[in-house]
Length: 276
Image 1 (cartoon, rainbow, N blue to C red):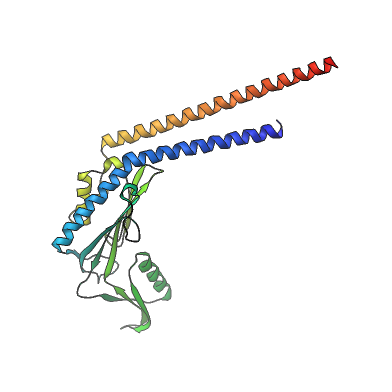
Image 2: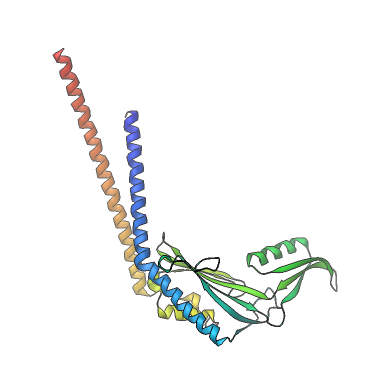
């Protein structure tokens, strides 16, 4: 195989990959428009109405014994609900939703902060990392005396930011829900099939957010949804297999044509020599 043939083959392979990627992106965009976007809009509308009611009622939810790590967080109130479609608290184009944020706080209305003491510098570093990771405000003081020894004191805010973030995952055709700090500073993630989002799902999620139900994260996908997912995966595999088959046939035809052209060129060359 000559250098041109080698480069031609590489170029054809690269074009095939690019065409496959483009086709996949177009399929993902179409699924987003028809299946994911309407569910993101439903999520936004549901929680917009929910927090409107909560802000009118203005009755904080009591959260007792929020954290095993910090026993001082014992009597908190959940309040100050806000909804946005980007991480900065703004509202993006409703026809292009890719993220929905529900934010609120657990706080102590009577006491702004509490003191937490650790004994060693390495513990202090871990404490700072933990608090920063969970976006909890704090101040650090060194060499504060305790009953038994000297330690490192942290003045930690009794205001815990909580976030429910819904984000579009076009590549995997689903919606990802990230939950930060709702319970005991835990960070949890749930993959949501768009078909799973309906009034019953959102009601169960709302009950979890308002601390009326702890079983939300154990939701099971019904058999009908599972079957739809299996069929979709099977169809995607079939489409991909057909595409590979077409590429193989096209490459074979190109190779045959190249062989025919070589024979033709040899015949032409032979005829020219005879004429001489």
